[in-house]
Length: 265
Image 1 (cartoon, rainbow, N blue to C red):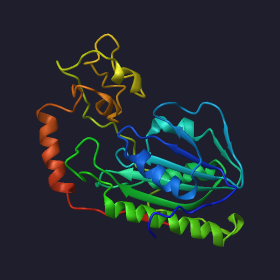
Image 2 (tube, rainbow, N blue to C red):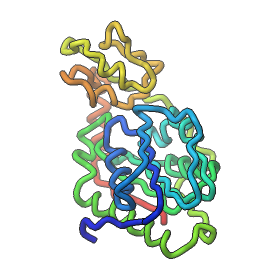
Image 3 (spheres, rainbow, N blue to C red):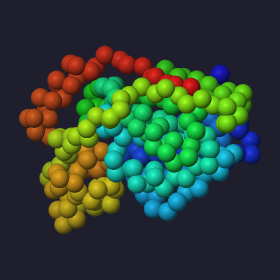
Image 4 (spheres, rainbow, N blue to C red):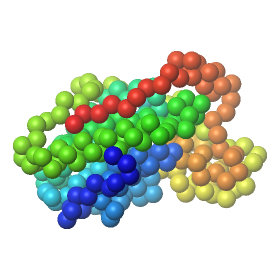
């Protein structure tokens, strides 16, 4: 397989992702790059989709979402509903931190189908856990990358072999109804290392950080996405406290055993 790019000539590839920790963007981008050098990219962390994005029949849509407690981020759903397919091929990807992706992949596929897309392939891949980074540390690793490329290859082979009209609906792992959306109780906070640069304020997708005192987090708004931790130049923003430390140890004991990607093509 090597590093050869699989070309899907004369087709526009649209890449959509929400990636506060950076790993979902990395995985989605790697898949998209196998299909085309030139892509139309939408990073939902930076800018929501507020107007309809029309995807033509001969185009390819690739969507990557992180998994939050078994669901896709609910903050992304309005943007995803602005994607308008016309029997457009789509690849759905979810990324989770080695616990379980539960209903997230099914939820994403259902939503895309409702918007007029035909799911060519759907995959669940593992990345370093954003809240407990000692779990799945430094993933996706080289073995993950090989499997990401294999998944991409299988999707391309399917697109080349069958017209969209002949593709049968994929049976995706998950449950109807989806499990209940729950609030993650652990929230990041700042400390005295904060230099009031405002980077966290600007990146937070839910406006949960106080502009006047960025050390403060509005726990009712925060979705624990960790975007603020990733951009903090001083390391001031982190998960802290005795409750977090106890949860971190318990989570590692329960979910440290390596899981492997799953896909449906």
